[in-house]
Picture 1 (cartoon, chains in turn red, yellow):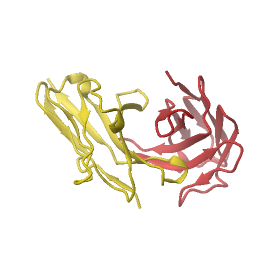
Picture 2: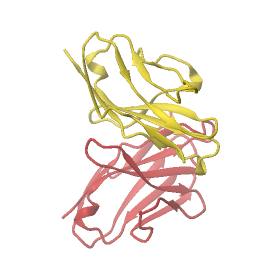
Picture 3: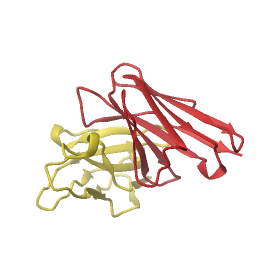
Length: 116
Length: 111
């Protein structure tokens, strides 16, 4: 079945540093990937839509200069949290749309970011 | 604007009892509805989609366009069904095919 790998699964960083999270579709091509934040026992908050070969589309209220998204290939999207602050600490999840199952999402396992 | 509402944040039932997780939506076109499940310490995964009209792990969900609902049902809940369940909507009119998720319902099945 379709698998999405997300790395790292957890990361701790100092305030002011940048952190990159990778999202890879291992056995299928994904023209579109999505990035979310998930708060404890709460829903997913869609942050942005990552489109291969073009700029990401950000949801209202999400700072594009703070959350840089790059989708350089059909199997890889990256989210970089720049100048991280403690309030950026969260669980970040990616998902990918398969070309042959356009509306079905395959999720990564998530990345726990803790900013000290 | 499209919207998915899951009115129950928490739902608790005893093992063997029927369970229904409610989902209502608003969408102007022809939506595709999904249920995703997240078990403890696991990633979100697709449970079922309305166009498949199949039963997964004993769960079924019927799209009711008149009531704009897509409730998830299981006649006899099991302890291993305890998880967080998300109802989601997608459609041809949505921007880049992105899905809209409900806030989720945490189901606890007690022994």
